[in-house]
Image: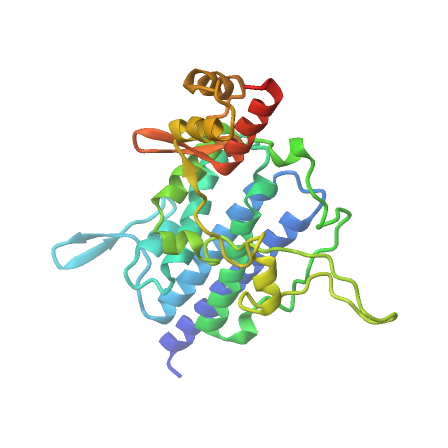
Length: 321
């Protein structure tokens, strides 16, 4: 083996080692109950993990991932003040045409990079709980990618197991907990980013991993039982559950215009309810705050989700319109 090949392999192995360590620390930090800035720490470390992983891949494929200036036929590499090469950051790695990642995985990483920019220098309440599906997708994507590109021996699946906790995962959140809004800037960012995606990427578990949990008891005494049991989305049980719940897939939420909601209430017997009443209600409840999840803004208008229709219906019942 030549010195050059040995050096390429040695650096590649070093990059993979750094990548795996960053990924492990990201997950361990997020799962640590004493960690306060969970999302911030997770994103920073996972961005580093993915960057080193793609650097290792590009080195393997002999793709030069250093910044340079093209002058005539020669390249002049950009350097730091101390003279070190400037290497591609993660976003530049994703933009490379030879990037091995699929569209949904790239969307997940670009979402996290943008979210990091939104929450820098201040604490954002609610993001640790509300966006975990995207963090989990990032981890599963990482595990899949590193094993596909470099082999099973580099996987981390045996290093981490389901986290034990003091909170019941089947517990239904209290109303105030479930409706706790995200900071306005974060909610606006999430809304705009999701709206920019194709339906295929948005629905993909590679972008956000969504699961439905049902408490299960063992059938026999003394029988071991896992905390979580997965069922296939096309199984008979899943089809029964899917009548009321989403199972391993999510459909686009139905949206309503304000005029349609008013007309709906009138058809249900609340004939005195009008557009003025509707406007006063959403203003009183600050319902167009994106963080409350009552609706979404599309070019030129605001559309309401079913959740808001229920609020309006309850209002009509309470006020006897």
